[in-house]
Amino acid sequence: MKLSEIDATLREIRVSPVKTLGQNFLHDRNLARWIVAKAELTPEDYIIEIGPGLGALTEFALDSGARVLAIEKDRRLAEFLRKRFTSERLEILHADALYYDLRRLFAQPRVKVIGNLPYYISSQLLLKFTKYPSPISLWLFMLQKEMARRISALPGTSDYGALTLIIQLRYRVEYLRTVPSSVFLPRPDVDSAFVRIIPREPDELPENDPETFFRLVRRGFSQRRKQLRNLLREEIPDWAGTAVAVGFDARARAEELTLQQWIALSRRAPSGAPAAEVSTAAERFSVVDDQDQVLGDAPRDEVHGNNSRHRAVHILIFNATGELFLQKRSRWKDRHPLLWDSSAAGHVNAGEDYDSAANRELEEELGIRAELSRVAKLPASEKTGQEFIWLYRAQHEGPFQLAASEIELGEFFPPDVVSEWIKARPADFAPGFVECWKVVEAAI
Ligand code: SAM
Image (cartoon, rainbow, N blue to C red; front, side, top):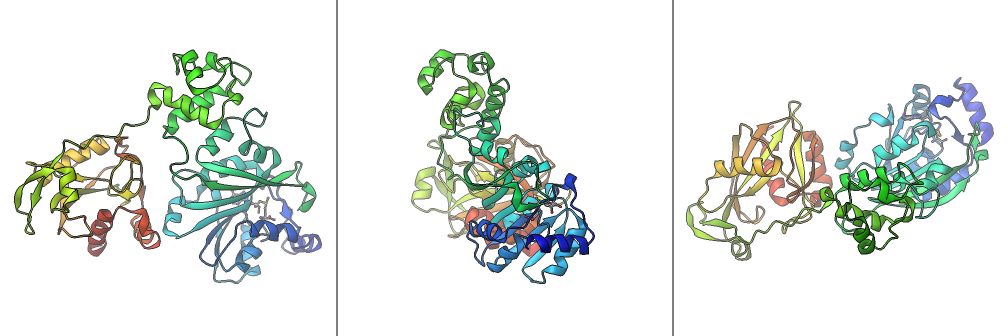
């Protein structure tokens, strides 16, 4: 929309822009087109637009053939958008984007997020929509220039701070261009800037414990002018040795360390040592025939190497609202690293029965005991990796003590999201879980 059209529309729908909702409407169509082009949208994309306003970006997002979910907090604008756009590919949600349930996005094959964000909550929206793990592959945000500079900053600059590192640990941030306040009606008090954010590859940076990393970074930047050695004394007792090993000056301040050095530092804090790979060399499993009768036992590698039939258990934990707890397997796993899997799962050891294995796995992986009920037994097949699987279920609300060497993280998901997610992104899941879920779906 041109400036005159925005003006006329606002008068027609009797809306005067609300400052507390960050309502500054973009009237530069060329810029709007340029912004949306940066998202390289295709008809396969599912777009979340935060704060569509009068639809400046929505118009071009729809032109790409993509499906768009536009989340607008102002009811009057949501109603206007419903009249302005009649495309079946557009869903307008009159809601606060801060409360949007991001888990639903896993059910979409490819998700991108765009928005000229309302500046009064831009950092909350940024942190919420970049929460890890995320099914989103690209974020394109208009932010206050200062915020854009902070999240894309390089070490040694005054913009470089805790927020920079918190975002950059997971994401690459590109500062695309500065945008003058004159392209908005009304003009905001500050200039804006446009950033593109993309996720890092899982193995792009050294393994680290994010909690420890965030804690050290927050503490390190809590007093920017102080030397780090005075702020992190408790976390890193051998400061001088660490500085030499990681390659920074022992008198450095927080802003002097690169992201890689912050990671190296966090790995040297006692709580930040990466979970060690668990040795599976000594494990022995029963080898069974096609009727699940024990033939003998053999070391784990031999069983897998020979593709012999063996036994496993999967446990699905549901909470009181019927959501399923999925675990994301650790990157250290020799099989299916970083894929989503049953709440807990594992092999039945030689000499062990199914029920004992299920109770043991629950304690080892999630740190809980629960009353297990048997759901079904799945036959050994190629799809299960030649495992006979007894599938169990239990109810538990968490929290869980996740075994770091086995599990990267875990989260409860509504069952319909799980089913749609498997359809949309089957490669995200360990195959054994997919087989188990088919059994559960058939029973629902
Ligand atoms: N995208 C439009 C444009 O470029 O012209 C409008 C951008 S304006 C900076 C921010 C928009 O976000 C406004 O339409 C405002 O009503 C909306 N908004 C504010 N807070 C919101 C929230 N919590 N959730 C969703 N939308 C919100």
